[in-house]
Length: 273
Image 1 (spheres, rainbow, N blue to C red):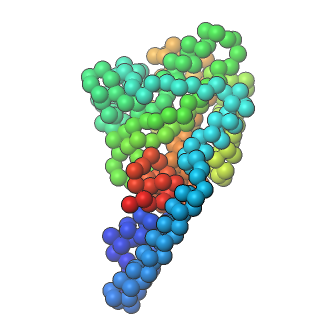
Image 2: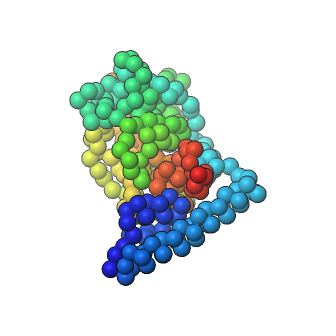
Image 3: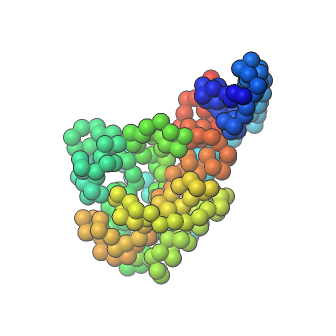
């Protein structure tokens, strides 16, 4: 008995999303005949989906997900913010991302003073602290934006990816319970069931992670926290960050985040070349 070769499986999964790794055949000739049939079938389905998009134009799936999350959070009292993609190395240092930190090696540096942000949190710390000067009540903000990390090739990782981070500074209630409520709001907007688990974190020490079928899609944390004094933050808060391409991958049953993110090769999961 023999199964598909790794290159055959890779080629099939570029066009489709089924798991072909457990299939067995009597010999190589039968395997190659079945491979040709499956390739023809998956390519035809891919081309039909592209034809449907051309005939009935829609927004990009990722944009639709972003809009659903935006609307849900605004309806629950969050302000949407937009902050710069380029941040200072001083901001990274305040997050303890220095040359000794593993994440430092994944940062795209522009020069010795600037980098492409690997996360949204540094800027959100600045905004929520400045908004605090204008109110005595909770400061609830969120951002959806691009982040950048040098990643190894993986079906779950992209070097340019979309994060959604929210934070409630001075929450009305227990921060952990508020965090769980906010996670529920986002996951309802995404249309996905999930579980929660506590994990250790290089940056936040301990996080409350969100998983869908064993795949992590978000990490949350609460304060006061050891990172807070460097940002002049001195009160409780609750925050969580979601990887939106990964959410969309799981929602749409895609085999890789490459099919759901920014791409010249894929559009809404369909292979263009």
